[in-house]
Length: 276
Image 1 (spheres, rainbow, N blue to C red):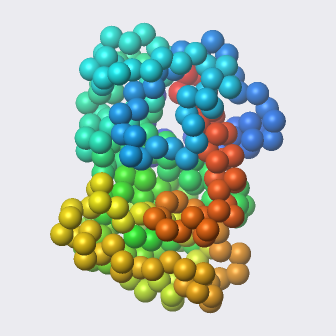
Image 2 (cartoon, rainbow, N blue to C red):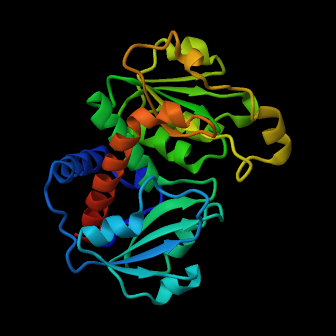
Image 3 (spheres, rainbow, N blue to C red):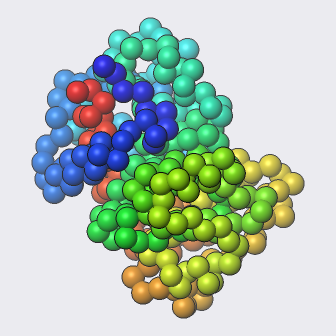
């Protein structure tokens, strides 16, 4: 039976833990079982790529790659798995229904991006040791970020402590927050970055960008949070920072190698899982 991964909730916690364990093996030198696998790349949202070169990663793992030029080609593509992204919000489910292949959503507009979220969650897992016993804060564009939505769901499934640090116009959608509260150990909503940093173990930066945020909101909110080394002067010892944020390259640089290594391992593990 093919996997239709539209949202993280399409996986159980046990399945995610198995993916993390397999990604650990791959990251530590095991060969991915992708030789002869046919993977179709239907990546039509170049503004929000994964943190690695997807095609090269899968080719290096032995997969045969087909690049689709239009989402309309999905229905007549003979392949094992399709990796999909689109700027059209909430489009993944409709296209997934048009194919018998496994379907992995790598971002459909402002809706969900479970592929990216699993890569990010696994990166936090490798950097901190687990997800459940630590606090992860999502800063910035919680409302319009597909990556933030999916990461919040993954963290909730693991029973994590979660803080959403943002302003009211960019706050996490109410229904998603209510859903995450059902399984998370704690969910906090705040706009106080300084106070939250004193108790946060992993900080995920959800960039406030004009591609997704409405112009009138973007113009007012783009400079609400200024991230400099001084911002983190009183942060909790051992804080790790990942994600994307304009002008914060130096803050993200220390974890970038671990994030990219985790993303390569998780992508291979996820494609393996999808074709079983």
